[in-house]
Image 1 (cartoon, one colour):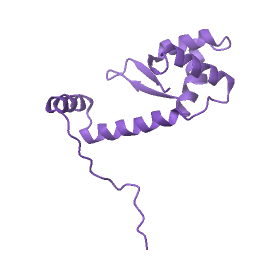
Image 2 (image 1 turned 180 degrees about the vertical axis):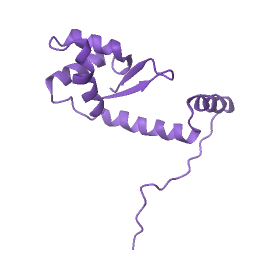
Image 3 (image 1 turned 120 degrees about the horizontal axis):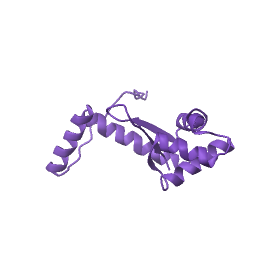
Length: 133
């Protein structure tokens, strides 16, 4: 009888890197309050999600599709943009949307669908969006 793998089962991965790269990486991890293993797992998951995005279709909703295309343009094909800037830009691109409701009507649904990721700065003052290409 075949043994089923547990979803929590892990495997060890060994990688050789220059010592100075590892030291700098550990410093960044310490600054962010995450372990090296956690940071690498997060990077692996993000790589998979980014890859999955290339096979996703445009949102079916016309406004969301227009908004996603606009966000791709402002980030030159995908990347980071300040949330306030994105809201202002979307308000210019969609005549029925103003800056104050662009987040709730466009950005939040796109985040929930996996087209965007949000990150808050360490001091909590700045919110950035990662537009996934």
